[in-house]
Structure formats: structure tokens, C-alpha cells
Image (cartoon, rainbow, N blue to C red):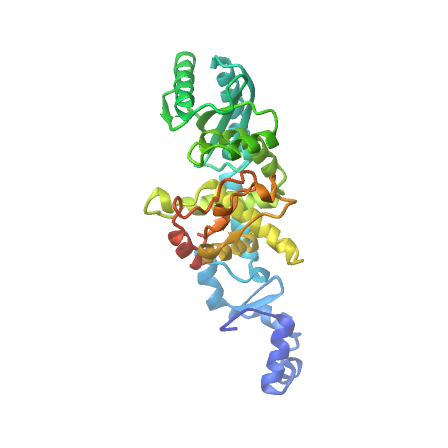
Length: 364
């Protein structure tokens, strides 16, 4: 038990193997008229959880610090995680985010002067992964009549026009960041609004993006957000719970700079990939959040060698759509919606701090 937790049955067999006498016989010899499991459960030296036995001296510090333990003995930590999730994503908070998002969408539609085909909802509010202290909404206005090959300077001009319209019709203090307009609402949401051509279909959008210069593509990526929202909508409730918990975990760490802090999309995709890997290995889905979080932490520790290309059933594009130069990057965590993006791009994200934090196997 100094090294690992054991089931009651295994512990009894190990005692018999080492000392040559069954535990039942020893208990009887010392006058304890109990079965071995009852004896262990009554002793303060041991902690029994989910059928596993662990030394109390080992369990107490880990439980208090949130250190992850073997999944079968994680009942206490799992309950702590569920209690935390209720605090960071309560029903009242989720309702508040939903109402705030609906209000912003209505205000943006009323304020814009463009011929908008649809307003695509993305970000944590659009994906259903917002938590207290980390709630954002990305709105993409797909505009009819906007040339699909419009250059970046033209698009920046349209963004400035949209910003002027929002300022004149909405009481917000906004900023122009790249190809987007951003502001903070009085409620829980941070807002980002972008423009994109109305491509008509996902395949047409991918085809047109494939012939754009690499530097020009990002300003039109917003048109793919509808597929991203669909991808997130397919994720089970438990998977989204793990996403929210890891966003909280990220918020409790001090990162040296923006480049070392893992973004929402990276964390979300790590959780989805972890769940898929369990299915691929023909294992049951993690039985609780402690096990699910631990599985993602294990992925993080080896992030620098990660190579993830999503199977056809999970991604939206064809294998041939992925640029060959992108497949050669390491680490590699392909975007399942956008074939032109490596979410783990080493030029944009330095994983070393995340890997170091994950190696500690400490959540709280």
C-alpha cells in the first residue's frame, strides 16, 4: 500500500502470499470475529473507497491538495470536482449567459447596416462551455454580396464600418482587434464580432480558402464557425463538464505570457480526443470526472510529441484538404473543422508550462 492502492480481495491474497496464512485465520487467532473487509474499514490507518484500500497517510494529503489518484479510488476527488462544477457553471449562470447572448445577437442584428445572411454563434457561450470568470461569445456575420476573394484591407475597412455602426446604435465601449470588433458587456460576456462572406456551403468555403494565400486565409475562417458549433453540440454532457473544469484549472495557474496559456479550443479538443481515445481502446468512458481529468492531464504531459489527425467520422473535411506542410508540424493537433489550422502550432503556442503543470497531477 505504500506504492499503490489495492482492492480488498487483492490485499487479502497478498497478505496470505507473503505470510503464508489466510487473513481470516489471523483475525480469528487474535479474537476479532470480523470478516477482513469489515476489519479494514474500521481501522483508521486505512481508507476504503470504491472497493480499493489505501493508507490514510497517503490519501489525506492528496485529497486535500486535489492530487489525482487511481480512478477506482477517486470517489472523494470526483465529488469535489462535481461540487466545483456546480459553482462555476450553475443553472442560474448558464441561464444568464444564454439571455445575455440572445440580447447581444438581437442588438447586433439591429445595429448592422450589412445584408446579413445569418449570425453564427461561437465561443464558450455558443458552445455551452462557459464558466464564471471565463465566458465569451464570438459572433460571425455572414454577409451577402461580400466577395469571397475580398482582400484583407477591404475587410478591415468593413470591420471599421461595422464598429462605427455599433457605436452609434449600441451603448458599448469597443475596440477593433485585427478583423474583429470586441467589447465587454455589463453582464458576464466578452463579445467578439467578425465578418465573413456568405459562401453558401462548407465545401465551397473550403475550396475557396484552399486557393487563398496562407497569410490571407485567417480573416475568412469565421465562415466555418457553424460547423464548429455543430461539432461541439455533438459532445456528451460529461465531456463538456470536463472542458469547463479544465478551464477553471487553467484559470488557477499563473502563466508567464499569452503564448504559454492554453486557449479554449486547445483544451476543448484535448478533452474530445481523450474521450475518443478511450473508445478506440475499447475501454468504457471514464466513470467519473476525476478519471476524465486525469486522462487529459496525461495527454498534456506528452504534448510536445502529440500527433492528432482526426478520423474521418469526427472531422468535417477530407484528408486531401490538409496541406502537407501542416502534417509535418510537431506537436500536431489538427482542428477538426478547419483543415488549415494546427491548434498546437509551435509558432503560436509554447506547451512547456502546461506540460509542467500537468506533470504535477494536481488539480486544486
